[in-house]
Structure formats: C-alpha cells, structure tokens
Picture 1 (cartoon, one colour):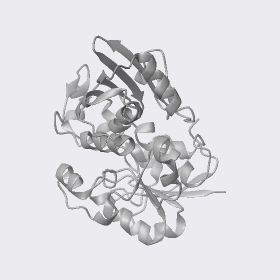
Picture 2 (picture 1 turned 45 degrees about the vertical axis):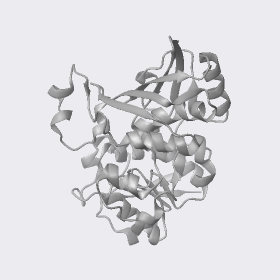
Picture 3 (picture 1 turned 30 degrees about the horizontal axis):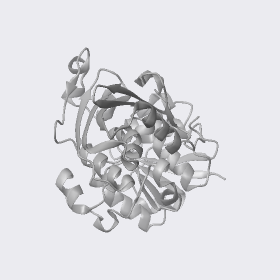
Length: 336
C-alpha cells in the first residue's frame, strides 16, 4: 500500500523533519506541502537539503483539494490556527495528525486558560486520541484526528506515568527540569534564538507558566488515574536539537531497581522506549525516535533522567509512528 501524506505548514523544522523521515518510509509518499508565505516555490528552495530528493511545489492551503489527494495530513501549524484547519480537513474526509496543542488537553477551560484563545473546535477537546502509542495505541488506530504530543511532555510523561500508575512515587511532589535545543523555538526569526544570544549560554524561560506543564500533569493523570502536582522549568541550551529532562521525585518505599523493573514491564513491547543503565545524553538519541531513560538514588529522592530528540520522538518522529499505527504498519517503519 501507499500512504499519501500531506504536510500543512511545511517550511518549519517539524515539517522538514517529517519530510526527511517520510522519504525513508517504504509505504509513504509526500504528495502535498503547503506554505502561506512561500507558495509557488519549489520546496527545495526553502529546504535546500531536499534538492534532488523531493520535486514538489509548495501550495496554498486548500482543505478540499488536500483531502482529495491525501490519506493523512500532518498539520504543523501553531495553536488556534491549527484547530480550524484540522476541522476543515476532517470534514472533507481526510485523517489528520495535529502537531499543535489544540487537541492534547482534556477539557476546554484548561486549554483556554493556558493558551488564551477561544478554541475553534471545542467539541473535539477531550475526545481526541493522544499520539503516544505506548499508552493509547487502540485509540490512535481508528482515529480521524491524533493529537501529537508536546516535546517536553514526551520526555516527562514516559518516565513518570508508569511510576505514578504503580504507586512507586509521590505524585504530589514532582519537579521536572528540562533542557532543549534551539530548534524547539521554531524556524522564524526570534531575538532569543540568535546565535549571539544562545551560544555559550543556557537560560531558563517560561518559569512557572510554561504551557507544557498542564499537559504533563493532565496526561499522567489520564494514564494513571492519579492527580500529579508537577513543577516544570524549561531551559534553552546551545545545541540544535534534543531534550534532556531531569526529574526529581520522592519514592513510596521504592528503589531504583523497582523503577527500572516497572519501566521494563511497561515498555516491554515498545519499539522505542529503552531503560538504560548509563546516564542518557541528547547525543545518544539525536536524529532518532528512541527514548533513553534511567534512574539514580539521591538521598530521599529518586532522580529520573530522560533523553529524546525534540524534532523526532518529540514531534515528527512521533507523527510517523502514529501514522504507522493508523495505517496498520509496524511502528518502526521509516524510523529505524
């Protein structure tokens, strides 16, 4: 079978990464790529690395035409704008993997509190499959819309959810300290992302009010059935890609050995989540869909460490993994 894929908002880093991965997918073909600002240009003019690899002209967004030619669309638009586009695509009969936060959270008030916009399709909030096959594979398989997870939440949910679910840690006292590369800020020009601002520097941002905090808490509770009180602080690091999350927890009479066993049991069928003995680093997973995580005992705390690639398992790799589940392909197809 051939899976015809459209990329809406193809000029950003996640759009490029999705195309890069799909070009190695034996069953997928990128047939449409849209851009509001660069419509009419060859995609290789915007992404020179695609020269000789993808002969495609960027087009304006037309939901009806895209739905006629695509089996699935990866929507790489920002929150708010994405939901309206996703709604139109689904109404015209195609399936969508949405990269924005518009369908990740459980309810509309939570979304509107943290994102400050009126949701364009509130009926679907809390009724959309969350794109983490490790926990929601059955929902993803038949979904018309899949909410691709946030990058930071992926690095926190995967280590935390099984431990909370099995009562190994105190869910009322969790601290997530994360570092990411500058590609997490997108491709558009921003002062904070300039080379002279980021080189040889590391800086916290969104302290106490980052929008991924409620996603971490919401999804851990959805998976485990237990409310999570989490403090989340992100940092910008001088690297292109990657996330390293260091998570401070209080054990409920659990040891590091118990944590590793819990992870091994939970992810025994997972293609990509790998508990490891060594200390993970972003270089260990760069350019891949793999997740490495480990645990260390430190006084009264258990420290969890998780490394992912923010553009792969944190975005486009997860989208390809979700596409594989939706179209009954092995999860690792195009990602190995």
